[in-house]
Length: 300
Length: 264
Image 1: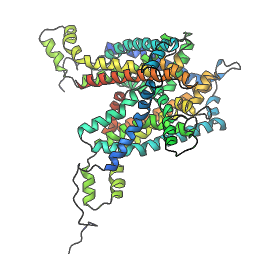
Image 2 (image 1 turned 30 degrees about the vertical axis):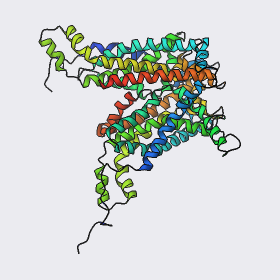
Image 3 (image 1 turned 90 degrees about the horizontal axis):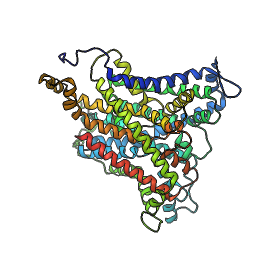
Image 4 (image 1 turned 90 degrees about the vertical axis):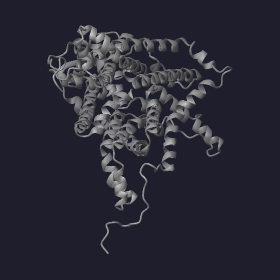
């Protein structure tokens, strides 16, 4: 582009200073304090002593906490895996549909995710509860004698997680598949590929960027999730999000809570750097950044 | 006979695009139905079981605690929307300049709230506010919500700016308009739909937020999601169905408005 009156100027525009100041004051400094606290010592009465203590990070790896971390990893992996399996056929159909249908399904997938997150989980609980829709229906059909326990246990947590995170998987998969040249499948077919070969050797490698992006977008927030296990899981099991919340609000061990939070941020940052560095090469991932903003509330 | 690479040379030709497996269509319908089933169930239950159709709505909207939380949500939403729309619009306008010192850093800063685990954002603000000895209440929640809303507003307006012709404003100044006048008569009207949809998004985000509010609200500043969350732990009441469905209804209305504006 030719340099114009507007593009010639090289000074930092004054217009960004208010938001820059805001971000420094309400984002960078608070995060800096959390990182600083994670390195400090907790006094006998829960106060923070300003001396270096690396023990907070070591404590994360103690067996009781490690068990919580492991449980969260399992839940996140389960959520990402199930969402991938459920979302792929949907994204595939969207990508192969006409323009109108494509937009319609896209809107239908995104819209529930604009509605209030807590209300969505509440509504899900209405359906799954002891006197919920599913149990009533099954009883009417005389398929069950006693109501199925679908909430306040692991089943509830699983369904809640899938229900909430499915759109995070559909979007990146759709973006990747939508870019895909489907005549390649026809070419493979013409060359005698079986259906399985077409799926494994053509479709899968070409949609891999979407699979990776979607899995990260589900895995990372699912790993730190606190509200869904809390509302759908009853009071039984502890996850990383629950542990961090309780450490901050109940046991008031801020250095330890800060250490866990720091690790969580590091994990999220590393994953997103992977996605973004792919983005420079992969147009699907680049577009996803825009889609994330467009999609609205994201519960990372 | 020459050797053919085809295993089965006589497959029927495939018509690209024409193939939509019925099983796939049925599956998609099922998934979409499952996504909407809870919302539909909620709406049905909110009208059922009372002497009149809107019985639970009347009851819900005369519950002082629920009403208070609704007002808190609206107050916080409006407050954070005003601040974040102003800051976000300015930031997006600043980012029109393609290169300047610190641009990359500022852009990463804008993207940071989108990738930062929400729980960490909430608790880091809690730590910071208590460090500043600030009383937690409506005001602290507004500050917290603004912090994530600014990013979304900026990105939405920036997307609109990228699609705009930068020469328009220049043409205005060539025709003798002052930069101020060129901005208000040419650029701003073109940006307005994006500014409005950014503001609506910002309000929706604030109205929806649970986790960051959970950490940064104090006694008596419960928002509606927080109120519903704490009520849920004591069981389900028909009033909750009514208020929940009202919220969903208004959110959907907002979404439709945002999409309309985006299309222009």
